[in-house]
Image 1: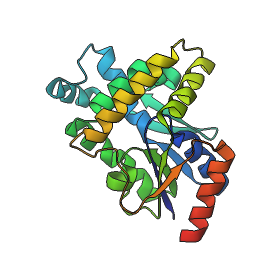
Image 2 (image 1 turned 90 degrees about the vertical axis):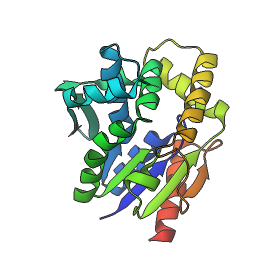
Image 3 (image 1 turned 135 degrees about the vertical axis):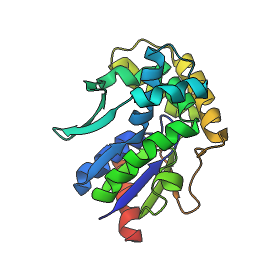
Image 4 (image 1 turned 120 degrees about the vertical axis):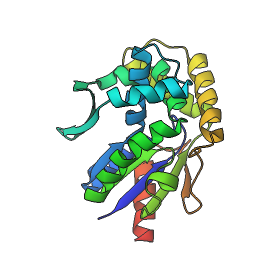
Length: 220
């Protein structure tokens, strides 16, 4: 089995890269950020402040999150409901970032992520995969790009889904989330010491995939 960890900030293209790698290698892709988005979505639906750690922790027993791979796509189910693109709204991104700083939430989702990797070869993307979730990963990539490039990618992605946003708002929210994720006490979003830093600001998706495939070949 092989374990590949793809970390990096929002809009770096982690999910696109991880999905493509999983398809090329014939292994499972796990979008860990979607798990935190599902928790954030539930917290918002209950009208709870995502930074109120006590109130958020009290909601956790009500939450049942499942991953199903249907037609090659990972779908996230919250209490039996397929959330689809509901968790991709910018506001849910902020909720996900806030709840991910709560130790109880991270503990709640940790075993789900680790159990998948124990049973399958995986490409897993997130912000602390190489440092916390899969510290023994065979390959660790920290994917990054400039703030402006990342914001433009996320902006175009949201527009393509019919979500009306302003580029300036996406950029501001992204910078705010980056700062929060990097500075949190629990599992900060920083590269693992043995991760390969890959800046894809000027790369196409296919070029990024080929770069990582070369890294995998060299390391293995």
